[in-house]
Amino acid sequence: MRTIPKEKREMSRAPMITPMTSRGQELRRMQEELKRALKKPVEERNWVMVVNPKKCTACFACVVACMAENVSPPGVSYRVVPEVEMGEYPQVSRTFMPTNCVQCDNPPCMKAANAVKPESLTKRPDGIVAIDYKKFRGREVFEKAAQACPYTALYFDDGRFWTEGTPALQPYEQVENFEYGKRWGRVGGSPPVGTARKCHFCLHRLNAGMLPACVTTCDGGVTYFGDLNDPKSLVSELLTTHRSLRLKVGLGTKPRVYYLVDDTQAAENLKACLACHR
Ligand code: SF4
Ligand code: SF4
Image (cartoon, rainbow, N blue to C red; front, side, top):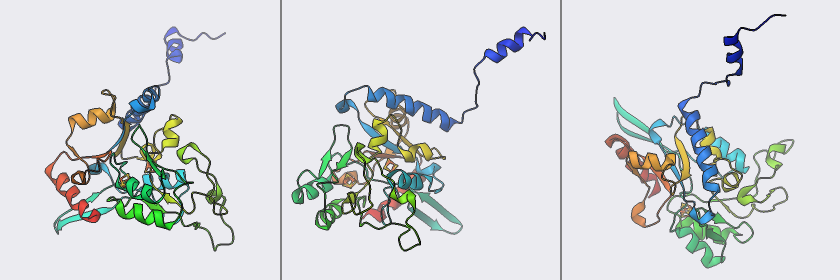
C-alpha cells in the first residue's frame, strides 16, 4: 500500500483557503455584524447605509438586483444611479450617485401620507420607514407623500407588467415578493398594486440574516450597510475615518444614507448632484 508522506497528510487536513477580494472580506464582516445586531432588541439596532460614489462605475448591478428582489414593475425602481458631468473638455469629471429612500428620521412623507390615510407610513425603531401596503391605497395619498419627499424616492405601482402585450406574461413577473416580511403577488391587482413603493433597506432580507440585495451585488464595493450603534461595525468605522455628507440635511429630514467625500472634488461633485433634488 502506498503511504502518503506526513507533510502531504497535514496539507490535506488544512482548510481550503480561497483567496478573498477585499470586497469579499467586507461582505463577510458586514454579514457577521448583521448577525450580531439581530441578537439585540429591534430598538437597539440603528441601520444606516454608506455609499462611496467615487468607486461607482455605473454598472447598475444594484439597480437590477433591487428590481429582481422586489419584483419591481415598470415605472418603479427603488434604486437609481444618476450621473452628473462637471466641467468642460478637457477638464471633465463624472460622478455616479446611487440613491434610494434615505429612511429619514424626520420623514415629511410620513406626515403627508398619514394625514390622508392614518398609519399608512410608520417609522420603525430600527430607523426604517415602512409602508403598510393595505392602508396606503390610492393615488391621492401617493401624490401627497411623493410631493412631500425631497428625495423623489416614492413610486406608484399602477399594476403594469414589463411583458404585458407580449404573447405571454413571463413567470418572473408573477412570482411573489417578501417585502416587510409578508408575501405579495401583483397578479390580479393585489397589493402592492395601487400603492406607493420605495426602498425599505431590504427589511425582509435583514430579518432573515441577509444583507440588502444592492449591497451584496455591488461589485465595485460602493455600498455598505450596518448598525451605527455598533462601534465596531464597518459603517461606524467608515464614518469615523472618512469625511461624509448626507443629502439635504438643512431640511431637517435626518437621512440615514451617508456619502463618503474624502476630497474636495468629490464634495463639489456631490453638491452638483443636489441640483437634481431641488
Ligand atoms: S427619502 Fe422620501 S420617502 Fe424616504 S423617508 Fe425620506 S421623505 Fe420619506
Ligand atoms: S436596500 Fe434593498 S430595497 Fe433598498 S435599494 Fe437596496 S436592494 Fe433596493
